Length: 93
Image 1 (tube, rainbow, N blue to C red):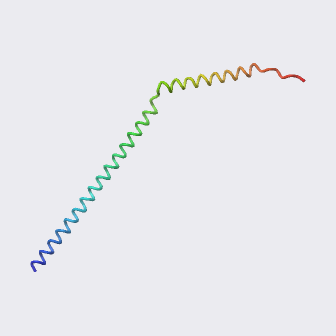
Image 2 (cartoon, rainbow, N blue to C red):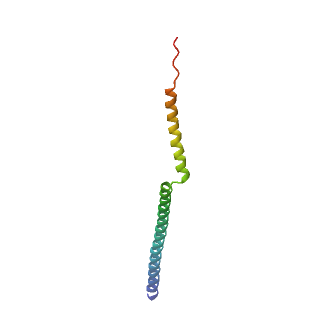
């Protein structure tokens, strides 16, 4: 009788230890997942911030290129207006 009670207590202790170990592993796994998710979101935020800064900062080259395009457009409009103003008269037959 004493050995069966002792065996029952040992089995009960092993079951309790197994449950505690399982719960602890689940908690550790959840913490790892949360840490991974937090790092991923932080990286996405950093990437978004870098992209925003890249889009707001204009370089002198881009400003110069934009000015050249405006000048070229203005010259093309002026050239087209000059061509229309200096058209040759149509020959009369």
